[in-house]
Length: 285
Image 1 (cartoon, helix red, strand yellow):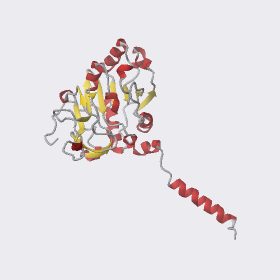
Image 2: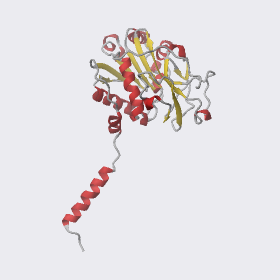
Image 3: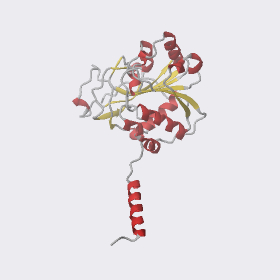
Image 4: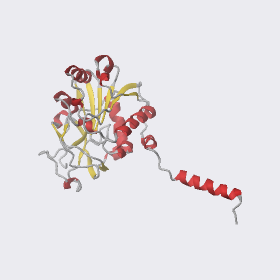
């Protein structure tokens, strides 16, 4: 016996509603849902997001751009320009930006070969520009660039498929005090170890927790066992924030990481003034 037409339509509608209710949110929706609210900024800043890699290309570059779009829209902190054109670093163009987001652009030294452009870029920061460096922006660079960033990639024993213990070393610092309530946490991501890293020149916020059982299954190459993962610093009059996190796509909509990144941007843009004086590595770590 055939079903009445209205029952057929009702079944079709129910199936459609069920499918819609079980549809996974898009990456953009996840970033939007998890982007924190911040204090109203004193002005709207201008940020360049540069994502061109000159070595390994991370699949998370595109969601990095999405994160930047959503942060700009939802917080009202800045307008963002996306460009992979190195001419944006020329003197007449770079000066328009309050900060530059280096979005997983490996081995910038292979692209920015012109000594004058390198000098312009470094001087831009020394004279007051901001740098927000995500993950592989710390992979490669000429000596002045490495000095500005604060460290240089030297491998990733703690790979993208693992879940690793993270120590919140500076739990009262404004940039990380709200990240997991200022407590230690775990995260699934690829974590770097660094050479040319001097804690005395950087304010370390988060680091690998070397008391964590999973972390101890992989051996790093630093004799001091100091594996910083997020830090900030002054560079001349400029401001630098570095996040080793940012290999896995999920990191870009992790609400706790987004809290840190939003506050990191407030710092590099000069919206807030925070302590950048180096602190010793905690004894427990």
